[in-house]
Image (tube, rainbow, N blue to C red; front, side, top):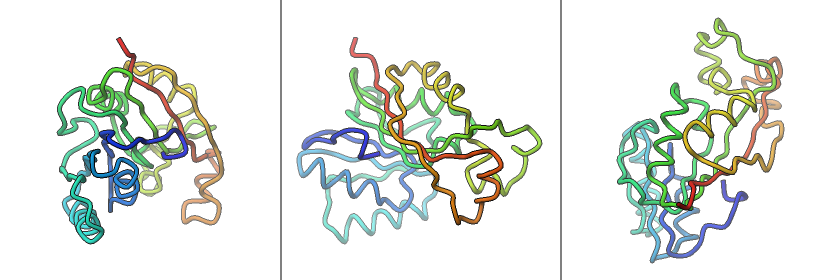
Length: 193
């Protein structure tokens, strides 16, 4: 998500689906001691790993909260930037997740998201295959669906800035190839007024 735009000193960032906190720790170094990072993950185990890493590095501006992308435990209008990496495709209700990201952004705030999309629609029976969910493929959208989902959440300026093969040689590479799955980076923003 960092190639999508600068994260500036003093900014407030939310990392949705932070996992072990890798992106959160990078963002914390970018915002410096005057900025703040709120890391949200649904699992206490991943949050514990992220907390340990932040403590080891000495980043007091990083805070951890357990929650879901569809109901972020953050006040409305708090964030300058929302980042997420490989999480949106795992959310069953992508519109709700994007609406929550929109809600926590200040007017003019930015979404900077790394995710995947498919170029061939995943049929309903394949969406019920757990192995395709664990590989992230079952929840991936077509580009037009993703654009419409972002717009339905009230976010504007949707732009894919990068796309590439991120599954070559991975455990789910044959499924990824079947649906022509690509890794993407996209950005959008909350309207200023």
